[in-house]
Image (tube, each protein chain N blue to C red):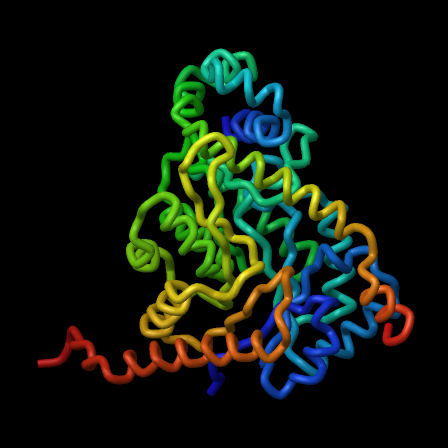
Length: 83
Length: 292
């Protein structure tokens, strides 16, 4: 099911330990997460380089978002003066 | 008759420069997620700007193409923002952002299937009911071909657009990056999606990155660099093929150059549009079925 695949993808993109276990044995991890044999096989075909690169990219984006969470000095000025 | 329009993403870092250059900016695009917690005064200010320059609101984090139903509270907050800013239109992404309680932190590509197309259509209907207008939906960039997909991306998009009736926000750098990373012809993509449903276009720049443990290279859609020539070429192609007026927004999220550099990019966008429109006007009249 789409929901099971998305749940596993979300974990793989955010949980390094699970990601490394998946890379070592993708079918077993996918099956234990409730995916069907066909879905597990499809997950296993995902290139490892793509998964690791995407995970790093999401990690960078989460960190950048945390940094942006602090109010930018210009925005703070705008809120005080214009808005 | 409406004309093509070219605009810029509204960013606080660019605010003063944008005000100085409004004669060269036809439309502004506001990131909804940056203003969901803003106060009444800030929203009033945004409304005043929206009355002066056509404004689009661009939402990021709803997760409209995920298997999970889009969250009502998130939609309520967006609806309040849209109601107070009164933009011309709003948009979201064909992506999921979270699943099983895990926040991914950015847009992720769901499996492309009949089921996910139906789910996206359900979410679109719910969003339309709460916000009051239907969003245009954007194709995303991805570094992973979504596993368990039974449809190609353009067929999946065409299906969602047909079933929901939504407009399409075509991101040409996302298309360029996906075509580069997964080695397909972006013109085939353009030939499959419903070009007549494009209501807005995004252009941006990106950069090359290398896989952490190898030498495979990827084109990343980072919005931190100048627009690449292939993106202008794709814009020209769309302008040659689509009949309706197009609104094109330049997205820049950081490493901001001086505003004249961005305004030059807007001029290059206008030139690409004009070149495409020129091809349309110089093309021979199509033969009509009933003509003898």
